[in-house]
Amino acid sequence: FLQGKAWGQHWSWIEANIVYETAHYAMTQLDIPMVIVHDEFIVPESKAIWVDDYMYTTGLGHEYETNYTDLIRNQEPQV
Image (cartoon, rainbow, N blue to C red; front, side, top):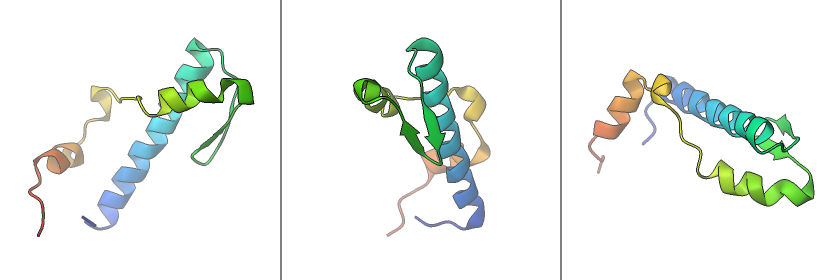
């Protein structure tokens, strides 16, 4: 499971981009004002349900594909 520094950096990069994509969509398409602090979204309470729903359905496009992504998909489980 833990595969070293490069994998940790890869996962951090993926997480940062998911946070960005979620915030960008929420602010531009759903008109939800927000402040991002690390990996948390600060939004008006009346809009919180929208962020929760969208946050767990965010996908990343092909531009986020890397050699690590292929390796992760094709890796055999370690016993």
